[in-house]
Amino acid sequence: MTTPALDNGVAAALSLIDGRKIDHVFFVACGGSLSIMHPAKFMLDQYSAALPSDVYNAAEFIHRAPKRLTANSLVILCSMTGTTRETVAAAKHAANIGCLTIGMSTLADSPLSEACDTTVGFDAPYTTGVPIDALNSNYARIYQLVLGLAKIFDGVDKLAPLMDSLGNLQGVIDKAHARFAPLFDDYAPQLAKEDVIYTMASGANFGAAYSFAICVLMEMQRINSQAIHANEFFHGPFEVLDKDRAFILLKGLDSTRPLEERAEEFLHRFGTGDKIMVLDAATLDFDGIAPEFRGNLAPLVFFDTLWRFIYKVADLRGLEMLEGRRYMKKLSDY
Image 1 (cartoon, helix red, strand yellow):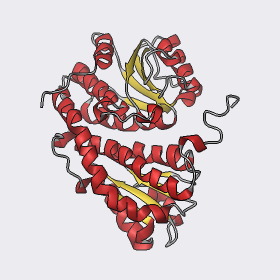
Image 2 (cartoon, one colour):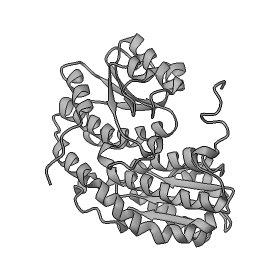
Image 3 (tube, helix red, strand yellow):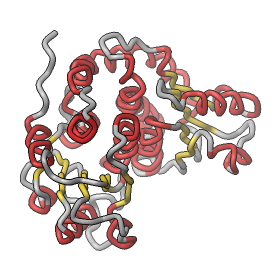
Image 4 (cartoon, one colour):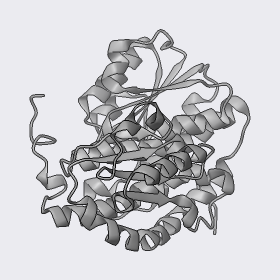
C-alpha cells in the first residue's frame, strides 16, 4: 500500500509553524472535541522534549489566563462544526495575545476558522451520517500535527510510519467491530438497564473514556456516568464498587496498560462480571499498524466501536441518540 500523503491542512499549518519560535502548546476545546486533546498531549509528551503542553477546557482557558500563554505559544483548538462559542472565544483570546492559532473543524467556513490563523479539516460521521475512513478523523489529523511539531522542534521524524499506520487503521477498526460484536450482544441488555455506568481508562485511552461518559452515556442516553482514571480509581472512587455497580473499562496498548490491568483485577475482585464490560485492545488484530503507534491508535478503535455498542443500548432503552437530546442544539440561551 502506498503511504498516504500528509493532509493538506496539516501541511499548511506546519508551514506556518516552521521557523517560528514556539515554547508551549495549548490544546483547547470543549466536550467531545476536548477528549481528543488528551491523547494528543500524550503523544507530544512521548515524542517532544522541546515542547511542554497543557490541555484546557476552552472557557477555563480564558478565565484562568495562564501566564505561560504568550506570543510564543501555539494554541490548537477543535470544534466539530466550528461553532462552539467558548472555543471561538478562546481562539480570539489567544489571537489577541499574539499566539499562533490552529483550528480544527469539519467546516472550512466557520466562526472558528475565521478566528484562527489556519484551519485543519476532518471528517466525522456523527455530523453527516456518512461513514468515514479513520485516516480522515479528528484523531488522525491532530496526531499528524503533533508529530509534525516533533519533527520541527525535536528533529524526530515519525510521520512516514504514522501515515502508513493511519492508512491501515480503518481495516483494523472494521475487524474490531466484528471481534467486539459478541461482547456487545452480551452486555447491551444488561447495561441498558443501568442508571449509572462508570467508564475507566488511562494514558492515551482516557480521552475516549471521557468522551463516552459525558457525550454518549450522559448526553445521548441520560445515563449517569463519570470517567475515572484507572489509577485515580484507587484514591477514592473504588469505594462505590460493589456487586451492583456497572463499569466499562478500556485496556489499551500504551505504557500505562498496567494501570488498567490493576483496575480490572480489582473490579472483578469486588464487582460482578456481567456488569463489567472490558474492551481489551490486546485481543484485536493491529496488523499494518506500527508497534510504536498501537497504543496511540487503540483509543480510535475504542471510540468507533463503542458507538456501535451504544446504538444497541439505545434501541433497548427506546431512547433516540442525537434526536433524543433535550437541551443540546435545542436551546440557544445557556
